[in-house]
Length: 51
Image (cartoon, rainbow, N blue to C red; front, side, top):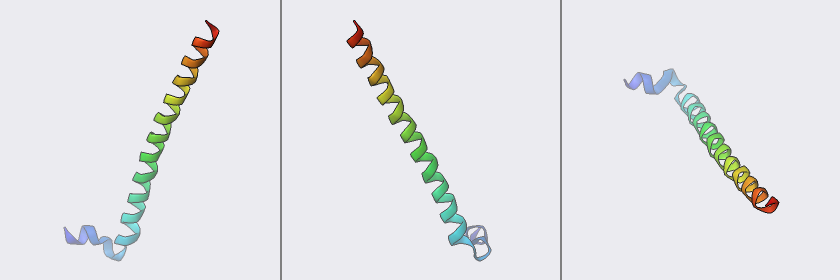
């Protein structure tokens, strides 16, 4: 098991690449949700302005 985590001497590169990939995916989800909320607010604001 230790050899798996050591990755043949490339552990720092491999695990940092995995970590960076996960961070980008998480930030992408957060940004999409934030944008979705902003669009919903804008639609709601426009809907009340028209009436």
